[in-house]
Length: 265
Length: 313
Image (cartoon, rainbow over all chains, first blue to last red; front, side, top):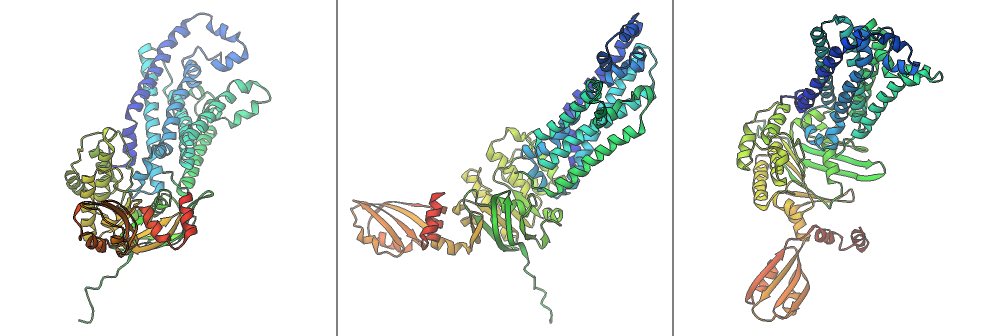
């Protein structure tokens, strides 16, 4: 695990990845095992229909809420899932370069014959790999839970929702990594990425109900992640590619800036 | 034979021209022109904040010059930075690295990044009595510095860049370190050592550059520098002495006599003073190593305005 920067980074994060993965599996199990209770509750769908629009925007589509996919869409992919993946991604992204710089370990690392681009590529690789571990864990929790609870769950829909959520995590993580690599400031990196995530979430949920702010949904990363309810309707290619484009742009900016700036001592 | 096979071109290890670095509006270094040949043991001497570390971090391409050029081992410091770092061992004064790794793991990691083997690292670790199984975060500063030392020398680099290398080392270790440096120098390695202590560079370097407020003031042979330096001497005699016994001795200034004690400053060699002192019975003799301040004073003793500047800082 010490043969290169990529493996060393995975090694450094192995404990946190383990805990986040346990959390992701548990979350998957929790929502799937809880689902039959809602499905079997009489009059729940009618109750949802009567809720004010604001509440519905939080819960999701009332008509599909009592289906397995609709329930997971509302209970997992609208908030808790992206929250777990997003927090992990942002922390991993902000510490990737800026964390090493602020803890003064970067100088000694870079005294070895490694180009900055190579360092960045390996750090990005480690971030994307760790996010994959978390996503697989959540997927296992969901499919396993549906088997345990004895209901049919669309594997294709679930997989696509997990992939879309992975893309959102990658965008937030790479934004943090990019700001960190461009400025060397860990706090700023985390703040910018968390801000993009939080504002994106608000614009796509509560604020989209304000007529004036509704068009602003299009600048929200959450809009591209799940506005078309991926687990129910599959990935929207344009939305998915938009997330990919944001991620690629973040990488390009970090390469360009990191290659040119002075490293902090 | 018409061709002399013993001919080996002396190439430059480090060459800077007009090297200038500003951090925003703050001065780093100004117009530094420096040439260090391969095989040189060069000391960069200056007070804290003079620009020593700035120079070193530019050699390693951690930071980029505002203007001017640097060539290291004949290569461009920016374009060939990775290739250059293959041949450099670097040790900063405060070696900070991954605290969660053990010393052994860190060395293994760095050896892997260099595509090297642990052979020499193990020899050096033994020599400096370094416990490879302990976590770096649990080590004292001196022990951490030992790891830094081992990793700097382990890949048999052509050029060693040592930034205030013995700051955290105890005297015994410093001695062992100086021995190692001299061995490497004998083996033909180039060494670039920065320090704010003259005594340190004096032991290991042939040539010294003095840097002050970002500007390289002079580059001199160590021997020449020593001649300009002041040594403070205090002597206790058996019987009372008179100032006139010493005031006329070559190089001696500021003689202060109180009954059987005498103190003075000596510029350059203290040989004449010793011969003058030998006429009396001596109880005790103390001599303080010349500090950098005195070296600077020796440098500026013709120029009072500069001297005042220095003390006004």
